[in-house]
Amino acid sequence: MQSQPSGPDQTSGVRRRRMLGLALGAGLVPALGPAAQAASDASSGASSEAARTLPAAALGRRVADVAASQLGVPYAWGGGDRLGASLGFCDADNGWLNGVCLGEKTVGFDCSGLSLYCWYRASHGTVELGHYTGAQFNLSAPVERDALAPGDLLFFSRPDAPLHHVGIHVGDGAMIHAERTGTLVARVENVLDVPRWAGEFAGARRPGQPTA
Image (cartoon, rainbow, N blue to C red; front, side, top):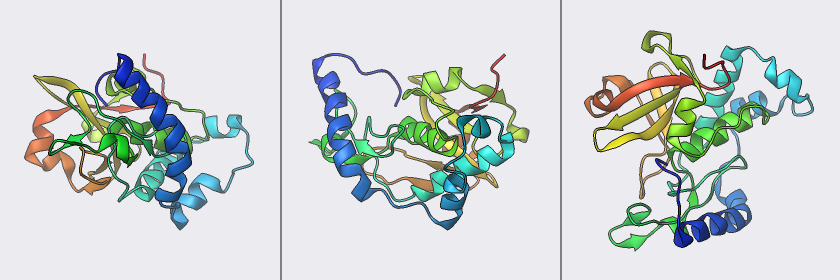
């Protein structure tokens, strides 16, 4: 999600997605697979302090596992929060497909909703990102391309849409992301070798690390 919604229609959309998404989301989001469940819940009784001291590499792998568990969940503009997929909404330009507002009928994630959920879930609530690509970029530490690790966030921009998209690096050059209305959360192999994504790559960031 690129910019913070404003105005009565968008505010109403946010309110609707929070209320209805909580009711609908649990039945539509796949349960964590064995690897993700073990990574995310093995220490469910552990304190927040334990999560904070988890090595960065282990935390990043947890993030990647949570992202993998969401493959196939629908895209919903404005959808996703720290609890998981939620009802989206439409604004003037987003959430529509072929003239139909899918956003307000779909429980799912947009790009930044997916990344905030994965990091919140994997860190047991110790890393909480904003629901906007710019906020996530600014709250995270820069990572060089040759130092990418699972869990790092990949950001993309165009001259007409600065920081319009974020995906989750999951290792081996692959990215899991929620791309646009009408698609499902998907994995892209060798993402930075794909001309479209390589041409828009704006840098990588690692949440939970000092930004200075």
